Length: 361
Ligand SMILES: *Cc1c(COP(=O)(O)O)cnc(C)c1O
Image (cartoon, rainbow, N blue to C red; front, side):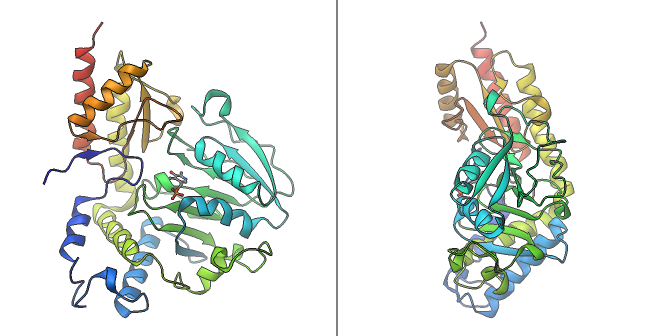
């Protein structure tokens, strides 16, 4: 076996300890005589897995009692529709556009109502986060929407928008559990887990209880109502059982490591290694304004498409995988999620420095 350093933006690297435990429990989970994959979702064993996953997530994120935690399917993109279907009472919402994922969310919301783009960084190819301290909030907007970490463009909103009393909805897919967040500041937080928490197939929604109601758009299918899943503790239908089990193992791994405060320090240190190198390099450069740089997704370029391609290919041969940037941005992107060890980032930077020496002008 030879595991590589996998810099994929998602599905992405998982902690090796978690994969080992899953492997050890593959044929028989505890004393159940079967794999978690084979269990009824109504069994006691699975109910315990689900309860424990929720309990551990509540501990990790310090989730207040007046918020529900839902384990859903349909990926992040289904939330782009679920959010407006469930929350647009006046059929108006304000969106902050900082990259590909907030742009897609806004486009989907337009199916359901009026979408006002109250801030955008499209003018500079989403390479920064606009000032969000005094926005032109629409008086009857039902909520304000952000994508807090833009996976493709590599920006993070570090200072939440001044919502002027409106409900804040945040897509945190690619920064889930990477640092502490104050859940109280949000109405809804959601994320697909395949970036930083687990295997593709689970979307976690954390929603304030008063936002869950039957007052949804009249055509909303049962499966797309938050209330359906809140009333049934995420067991209205068969949930993605095995994937929830893996998320639960990742939560335990993170708790053992010291939780979100501890992982934040590690993530900052990892990102610093790469950004410091980028800032000193003569051939590579980061594409995002310093103050808005993501600790999770680091896009960079050489400015020469052929050299980019040569680098991606050489890195891959050296066991540094999935460094190619998203097709909309080009260049390279290294995702440094929780499970990426510091050794991986160091290996990448060493490789970049060697590559730079070999290409000195
Ligand atoms: C990947 C991603 C999505 C889309 O998730 P899917 O599960 O593929 O639908 C949405 N938002 C962000 C920030 C993402 O990184």
